[in-house]
Image 1 (tube, rainbow, N blue to C red):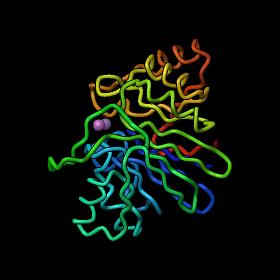
Image 2: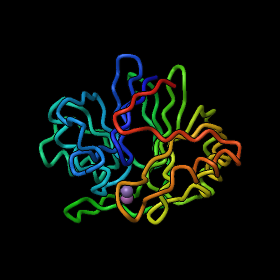
Image 3: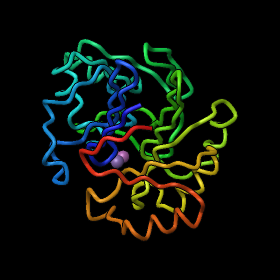
Image 4: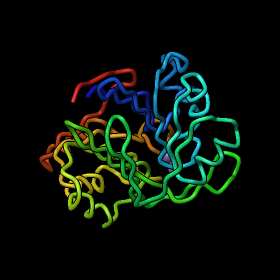
Length: 226
Ligand code: NI
Ligand code: MN
């Protein structure tokens, strides 16, 4: 599958003919000023929780593409009331099979409200199981023992984990999370966008290497194949 990074926790996955976008926060992100939001094509937009730094461009991209927004019941309802035609409400523990694979909404330890203050339900992560690969998108979360449940049900190939500290796990907790979910390959997210979450790239790479994990820090706009 092809993965493109748009900064913060925003990734576009191309799985077969399908395009799945996670947590679009692009236009306010100074680090992503080279990205043309209106050129992004997506069939599904998966949101981990309601915070601005995960949902800012969801409405715009959904309207541009007639995409389906998948999120907690509360967030999906909020977008439905805004006139987004295609929404799919879920809640933690539930799964749904879509044309590109099966997604399961899993727990995250974090808060969640929408930019206007509307209650957004629980924060969440996703496990995405496709024909060829299975991965975990953790969203914003603390390290939690719930992560140990994931490898009991799924055989993951890689995980996208927050590493920026302050609002989420830091690299050390993320490496423990990688052990909990049983992956050796981690794509880092939720770092550098704001002063609170700036990290030293060399330092985190060294810490990951010492733990025997492959840590991928993608450039904004970069596309990789996994
Ligand atoms: Ni958040
Ligand atoms: Mn966040």
